[in-house]
Image (cartoon, rainbow, N blue to C red; front, side):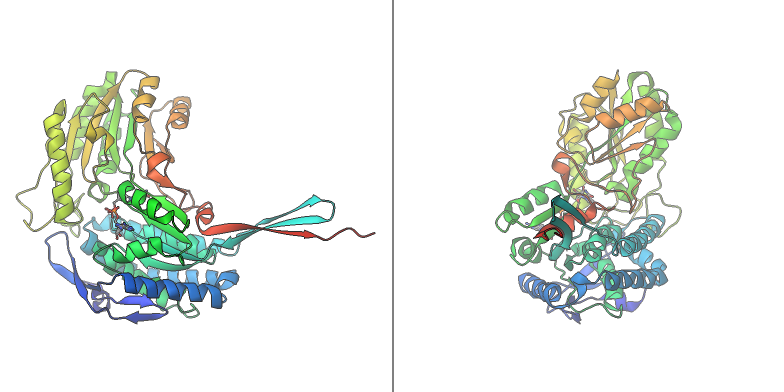
Length: 487
Ligand code: NAD
């Protein structure tokens, strides 16, 4: 293993110091269940200490008023991460299971995103209006205060970068709460930040835990001004209800049920292989992963066969092995949940096209599950409606554009979708009609630091990535002055 031993155990990062936890928990490799290292298992007290440190740093350091300092810190952090990019990619595959090529892409994307926000740190302007003769309204974009960032395990590097980037760039101070499954990776990222000279103590803090007590405290604390959560819609709803008491700003990036709409003029073989890859990225554990494939009746049978073949051809195994296209799920508990949902779908669907399952040939303590494909006509079925966070696809058919749009929009989610056609006007027409935060044309899962992502409906609130992410972490202040006029 190439990553350093210092990444194998962690503490809590509070007020500028790494504090050993009183309790430690093991981080497990989902490939075989072996222990990779240990992390500090905290709770409410650690969350309170971290919130207090972030609050003091916001009030008493120059951070909130010094864009040049913020830029220097973010760019120095990116440089430090770049120097250990390969170690970080390997740690990500060990802890999360995703194949190494995906880990390398994610680490590079996260570093690029930190640089992007480092650049923007010095350009977060407001505007000034002369609203009446001699009366000036200055609209100032100010950091909102302490931002708590709850980060999931599926893409822990890039999802950390897209939240902490805008939060720190605009002058907020932060408390990060990583997912238990990927705490070593988040810690390795933040340890590099903690080594940047000039970062005032308490500007960024981290509390880790196996349970939810620290997370719950971040949501309820009156000293937290912004709560940024990436995770499931069910947890997002609970957070929203609890946060109502303190009326903090919420940035919620939640679940999805991405639909791919395929027209007869698309290249069916090429589209099938792209959709198979889009459905099995991170073993199907990406919020934007392809979940439903709506296909025009005239090419339905061809797509069914091509998609079955493309999914069946994906090699499943150790993410460190470059021959593999898909690694394990995050842990055996998640695998059991997904497997249960998939088997229930097998019982209820019109046709099982590809019956995935637990492969005999891989370690029994690993969390492997091979891809499945079912065909079904009724969009109300639970497996067309609920997010199943694993390698599972549903094939559906339509006969015209109106039916395609109606079926695709029959969902409570609205995160992302894709349209597959060579007719440019049709692509734009359908993209406009789909109620989603992102629509790809002849592509899927393309995400950029520069391009805002977020959900319509129950896929969330606010936007991350891009310039508009600053809206989630800033307040707009109106300063009004009657300067009068020169007589
Ligand atoms: P999850 O909802 O189980 O989130 C777990 C996190 O929530 C943990 O960190 C936990 O400590 C915290 N938590 C649990 N209960 C809490 C409470 N009451 N208050 C505050 N925090 C609490 O989600 P997951 O399984 O970790 O992640 C998978 C989900 O994330 C999927 O639904 C996926 O679609 C979604 N996701 C969305 C995006 C996006 O950009 N929209 C990106 C990645 C993942």
